[in-house]
Length: 603
Image (tube, rainbow, N blue to C red):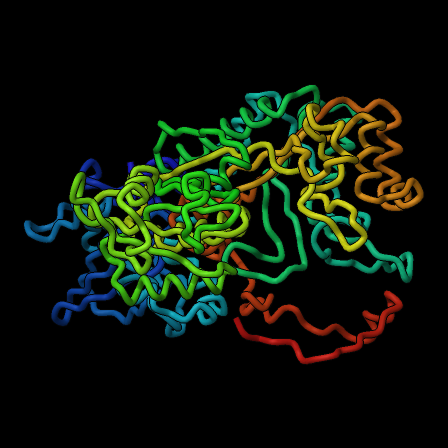
């Protein structure tokens, strides 16, 4: 079942069965079973076609689709006027059936039209071949018109289905939906927050939550056992295609669980959401470690819609005398789209690798097989037959394939090859399907600060792997966290972890991070205090519903699955927000405004 078919059959079905007093039927609900019935339909004029002086055909569009109406009196009608049309359902004449729409076999004939509302000329086409060519800023300025397009109608209905499927799945597993505050206390961790001044407490501020993280852990201390929320969150960060100031996430926390339990809850919810939108039910959710993901794919969020994994060749070329390969790591993989990589494009790849930090990139095109095996490469003369065979066998390269090799430190090699893998795969391969992946055993710390203290890779309440706790002080960068990510088609959907509930372990993490007892109390005191009153073992997860909806709907940006998004400069083109407020309003909060530079209105 396609996404469009799923949308019509499940989301719109209930709507079709619930007509109102002004209409007897929706457009998509009319078909050959209704022949001879007198019906009333309401909607917008999508097209007008005049045939002679007294015959007008219109396509009337409502929330479910369109239906053709035949009017036998001359009258003035224009696009996007709102009408109520009453007439008799009859079969369309032979040769005029439109198989692309549910009502394509019938039309409403002898139609009587009631004009409910007129419309100014629309700023861009609602349907047809031009509907995707409108500048996005214009679309966002007239978002109330843009949202009438079938693509966005479908997307927002699909998003609603996702929310419904998630709720059903989690409630079947015993989760309770609880709302947490939107006015919250400032937190020192994570992204920049939006501050909200208090009128009753001048000079003090709430913040809008960037996540319900602390609130949901407090709910576990409160004994609610299994909590979830489809939560609105806000982060004052730079925007891009997959990020908005305000976003929606599925937020989940459970007590007395392992990380496998949490992953099972999320797997079930995401699988249900995927099935209800796309119809796909035979989904795999494999699991790999963070180390394996980096080693094989050069990324902690690998796109598995294509293989082309990276192999390590350093052991095979120790002492080979090839200076370019005399590095701690030598990574290689078969380039996606090898057949399309001309010499000029290969030269561009070398430059791209250098821009990513590599000293260079070696390419070799495989020629021949068996005894005639050879390669075309800038270093071809430096390789003997055994070395060529080693590379070809390790990468599973075939005749015509291009093998790319980068040497250097392990992290740099994987970062460069991982980036090239994704860029080439998405440029040259026809990618389809949904490939989910769980990535586990992330590092507890991601590096050292200027004082030599480890930097937390997650929030400081993430439980370390019990096998690694003894290395917290001696080898902190080797400690694994009990954290896990869910990935879809190379995009991180969300992250989770088992939380620390043992004060001794928490103190060890704070010590490793260089956080004193006094600083910990000042920054996290109210949560640590709650943990002194009996905190159960607990863990949770959160994933972005905007991003999941965009991927399931085949969209490249989350703006296409959000009703009223902001531009990349944070502007609301429709309302003009953000706007200045009067001095009297500022005065009621005890505030004055100093503007350093004018606000941008671009995208």
